[in-house]
Amino acid sequence: MLTVGSVVVNTLHVRRAAAFWMQTLDCVPRDGALEGDFVVLVPRSRVGAGPSLNLSESPAPEYPDVHLDLYAANRAEQEPEVARLLSLRARRVDWDRYPAGHHDFVVLADTEGNRFWVIDKARE
Image (tube, rainbow, N blue to C red; front, side, top):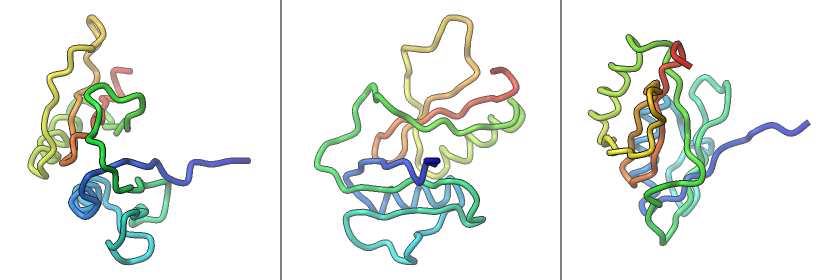
């Protein structure tokens, strides 16, 4: 059976992206170092998959084909998590593709412009 080992995120600055995602998801470098053009991050708890960061010459697309969904248990957890991520230099994205009447997620971008969603799981 196959399992997801990691999700690869292309980035213009591997170390800067790694610093953001390590704080966001409480990850550490799998090999203990942030060197080279490709870094695999793993959860500190060693449970689940973490993002891998790949040096790219192309900036993040405005409308990505794939994105990360980060789950918050409910709105009471979602709001402070969004605030925490903004303090880590994420930014809100003026997303024009929210489904009508369905606002259980907030679209943010990491330090490299890669979009990700913070979802209120209670409203799914």
